[in-house]
Length: 147
Image (cartoon, rainbow, N blue to C red; front, top):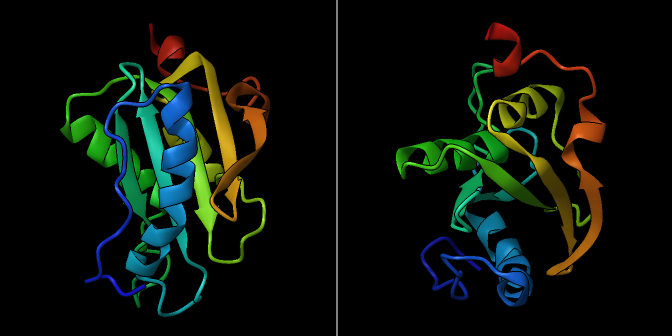
């Protein structure tokens, strides 16, 4: 699917029934990723504490490491829309493998993650592995440490 083709509809508010629809739509966003150097495409959806979905794709840059991860792009979209809490992060990769956030994205997610935040891997348009976010970044430094 090219970036100009119509993608499947993406739910704006997420509940348990629409998580499957979001997971099914996420792989179509991989075509919008700008990964001309690594050819490793990633699409992410950040679900805020109000249940709204915010999307992002990775955007590489010739001046490595100036690129932007999909999770970072989705977090920026969430903040722009007024969201301040992350309940869930769904991630799909062009490799169709289980992909977890990189270290820098784990720290970015931690800035906004709720206590029950989870990371959901998406393969073949289906939610597969679920990982409690805080198990990926135990004993991290964050806003709570600054008072």
